[in-house]
Length: 384
Image (spheres, helix red, strand yellow):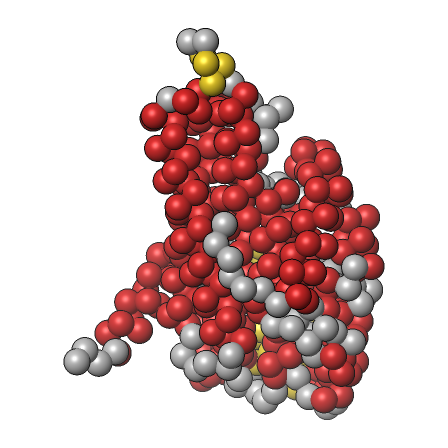
């Protein structure tokens, strides 16, 4: 692995996350995959290790790091189980809107709870009729006196039902289209806010995915993040800075699959010798290693660019998410191939990595949408 010149604090984050992965996540991964149970006990260990606060400013109880720091933890957790890793990373996705657009009062109210791991965050954007076309959302929020009344539904919400603090997008002025969307904080337990069915998923099964249902849900007007009409812009900016986290999850999946494939290739004997001695297997592993390292480098570079305060990061974060997730799918598929028939069996770990990898090409914007983002950005660039 390339030396990415981590600081001592970053090495500590990586090492603690790796220890939790080896001691807690890996032994529990298959069981959580079978049952689909949310890993509350492992999340508690993550919280006790202060990892939920790595990206939150110190004045709100965090460690004062950034996107790069949460990518390090997410990658390590994903080497063990991408679903359990998502229970950690999804809280950050729900928190970024508060960090980016929250008032001082809102930050003081919510960020210390999230940084401590006492409360988890979640982000509600997608609806049955509004996936990649976020401007088509139907959930509404109407100001009535000192409250907004929210009606509608979000679906495919990661950590839905298990998270406590939700940042959701709703239309406050339908006539303005995307410019009529606004961003709100809605707390679990608010009257009129309920959870729908828990989805039965192909992969990342330890992570809960549910519908959010709003029926005349009254939210105090001070729960509006930023100003009315900023919701769509807030959502797009949130996704721009969160996509390296999906890339980090994908890198962790690829690395985990590669680790298992390499170990198996050393142990598996055919024709009287280890299959690792066969040139065909060596070439597959070489490509898997090179692709994984290239994805890691792109994800790290994108995360560091965001943390440095660079503007117009959308193209680079889209490339990081797109490339890393494609690599995860390719490497996990090749790992199954190296295992042969055993790779297809659930008692061996790589078929789970293959199932988990697929979602990284889909959520937070499909890879086709990422290519659209990259292509549009290239069109705007001046060629000298």
